[in-house]
Length: 464
Image (cartoon, rainbow, N blue to C red; front, side, top):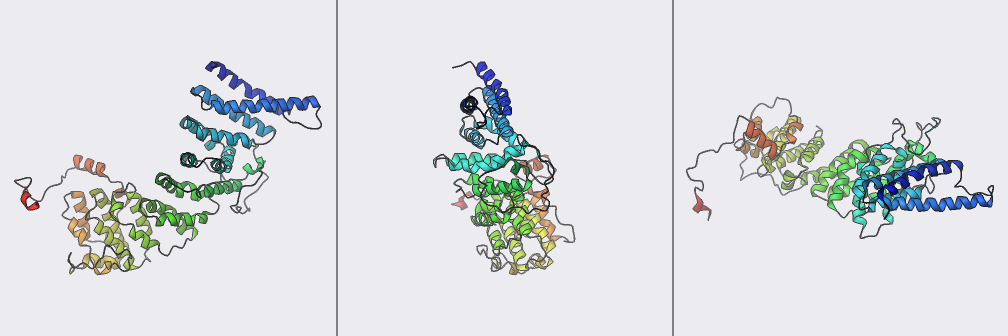
């Protein structure tokens, strides 16, 4: 094989030559040119194609220096052809394909994402072509490609708006005469068969093509829970705010919310956005939210996020009393078997619910409810039928004897005056075993047993 340095020098030397030839119009064939000139143009096009093919192969070269130079040279060729003729969609699409299938994918991805986040036109054509790329992939390879494309889409941090201005790599800057301020955002339809460089100069066209890209991507069957979670984690931050018609996600999000488990938890943020900002009507929303309150959620890595959303959805003072009481009671019941960190998440949430909804104070004032005679049915997933209003929060009373002082202090707040400010929930949502251990290790209080046992396994025989 050729010396690495020779490949590097040859790769870097050719783009300036092609740039000059593009500027001179040497690649264009026409009837106005002589036969010899057209033959030269054909020869140049053939050699440009050979050079581009070599670059596409070399972006996966074992030497990083060759990778980087081949990648930059490809972009130089794309730029020169764009300025002189039109954007070379075929070459750009081939670049995306070769990055996605490359054994050097991780190295190439970072450089490519830097370009996509820097230049609006490269990002525009990426959105336009990426689903066409996925259509060419064999079914057995699709899961890996699906994962890699999603990673790229989620790594994009820059979005065109009417006020952001443009940063173009190979597209002429707008002349400032076009005014889109009164233009409606176009309907999300299929991409245009032909795209002018001028389309990349229009903010609404960027929004349209972004919407087409994501909606098409979400139609691909998701066979991995990890991918599903990644999509939902990014949905309310990086997708919904930039869609021209966010309501087109209603079916996807309601299906996700109904899926149960972690998927339902992660769908909450996006559903809240659609309900709050786009008037989504979801009659069974609170029933479904109530059913998600099980032991699994107290051990989930998304526990803090979930409880924050529960608090947000229960903020309104117009909610029915039975509904708020059901949530307060079910949350309290979870505390009996939840880890200490989860209990510290839950108690301030229940306390705030009672402050916002004084009609539910009967739950802590009722004295005639025993554990055995509790009217509350934990297995009933309909909050209207669970019997919470006929019950009491005896679980909170029980937590006043918890072995961890942090927990018992929080529980004792219910027996004091409630004429206080609500808890700042964010201060209690980030607790884990690690933070609790640090608090106990460096704090003044320690967890103590009720009494000292003379034998570690006192009553051992009674267990069998």
